[in-house]
Image (cartoon, rainbow, N blue to C red):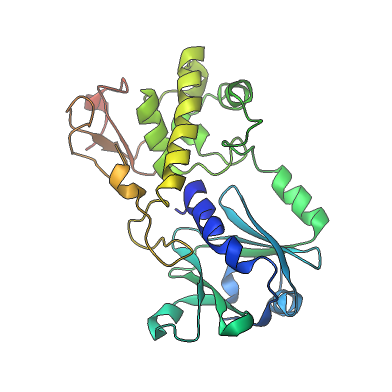
Length: 283
């Protein structure tokens, strides 16, 4: 967290308020989030630069600058991007990592409670190399079931782990992998190369469906995630398996099972609807 829907929501909230605006007086309070760039170079590049586009790639917010650079922020589990005004409450500044001035007394803040996110500053050439290492966007119009099956279906790893591999598909994390697998009726521990064509087609549609619905819902908030408006998301009320271990399945009423055996993360699923075996899982 945040995953694709959360970062997409943040970008959609902030882009209308940021594109075309000039950055000034940038301040970095913690350098441990930087990757491949020094504090001096980051602040020097941002100062006086103008944002020409704000977009999303995978789980990253991408600030395209007039200088040709891209500031890439991956919020991680506890990060948030928001704009504050002169009258912002003092608590709004808690855990600020990066603060950049805007016109009219506003400020762009990157807050990160545990500083698990990262900030990169890339030239155009560096960005092309960086983005080429990430898989295709699952909601892109030109991403179809054939490419999905090719990227997913050859691995012998558990299908949930494969779905979360950013080199194969961009932006899917623990929450939405679990939700998509439930909708598709697939055991998350099943090896990806043992899924038949019908299962892959169902999963392709389920991934796109749940991501689209989560964006419409403003993302999922359990604790730290906030939209670009500072408000929590609302999709947590629509989750069918994630975070619901021990509760009844919304389809069949069986008790949902949670295991850490697949990839070391909590995976919740319905042993009945998804074809698993409860005796081999831990609650």
